[in-house]
Image (cartoon, rainbow, N blue to C red):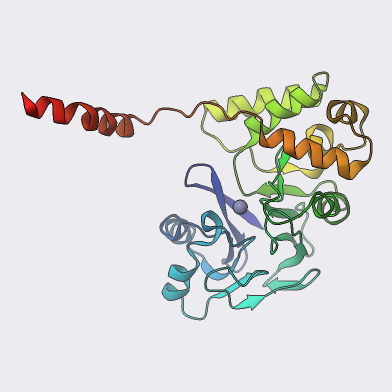
Amino acid sequence: MKVKVISVLEDNYMYLVIEESTRDAVAVDAAVPKRLLEIIRKENVVLRAILTTHHHWDHARGNEELAQLFPGLRVFGADERIGALTHKVTHGQELTFGAIRVRCLFTPCHTSGHMCYFMWEDDSPDAPALFSGDTLFVGGCGQFFEGTAEQMHTNLTQILGTLPEDTKIFCGHEYTVRNLKFALKVEPENEAVKEKLAWARQRDDQDLPTVPSTLHEEFLYNPFLRLTEEPVRRFTGRTEPVEVLRTLRSLRDSFKKPKERPNPQAMLAFDWGLLGPLLEKK
Ligand SMILES: [Zn+2]
């Protein structure tokens, strides 16, 4: 099982999972069809299905176009709002695509219909993979747009947190540096946070993805998976895990975004917009 990591839009990840013996492939969060088609051609694979984690446009907006291009394409997800959905899946449901096996893990909170996908191949030495969408990120967790801290607590501790520790985590966004800066604020003494942040900054400088991580690693530096650790409790001023999580997420919400990198084209357009009329008057 090969996973192609495809960076799209500002900081999204789209994935193409390839079964190497048959060249069958399954896409996860097909937001940008053009990019996906390039990879499909280059890898010489047949797209069998799309698995969508949630209905947000930056994860699902390519579904309709791909469904038109590939008649009979199956689109899986847990939310009626997902475009071109053909198969609504439920928690624990298992899917098979050739040798690729998928278990659907329902994790409502970021959206009320969020599904994660746990994948493996029977008789393969490869570690399993989790496509965690906007529920679990490298070093962080998703915003609670349509759910509660109780739900996210169940998602992180009972649904995702009980998977094998060698599971590779492929998440929906490249938020790693920002997440780990926050993690360092929460646990300034945590060496695992410091190391991962230094590494993530290097990857960022080279424009390389920080996915996948492993669940084992996440337990070491991701504060949202460390709710019972003393420094995390102290930082939030809470002891009950759900309350620690609720407070942690709301502090993360207000944690400042780094300054946007200037986009030279946008700056040019802006300058012309400002100066153009003045110059024309002359
Ligand atoms: Zn989202």
